[in-house]
Image 1 (cartoon, rainbow, N blue to C red):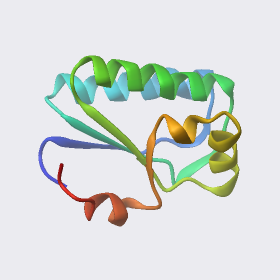
Image 2 (cartoon, helix red, strand yellow):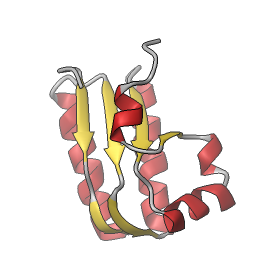
Image 3 (tube, rainbow, N blue to C red):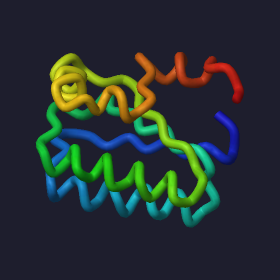
Image 4 (cartoon, rainbow, N blue to C red):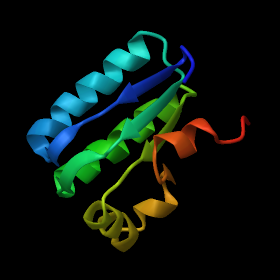
Length: 106
């Protein structure tokens, strides 16, 4: 990953409490000049509606700054939630970090 890419690795359950900490991490990354954010969800065991809302709100903030955000390494339960809510159509999702790193440069 290059210097303009920030890696954010939340863990546990992404809910209203962790969602606020997640938003703070994203804001700090954007303030430090990141143009691309990779949200690695490998350590997330569950996402509730507040956590999903945090992801959507962060995506809006990232796009408003003309930056990009990607998600990788979801477990099956989180992937199912994204599919049921059609969030898999909103976010660009990679199976793992290496797939993100080998993506074609746009």
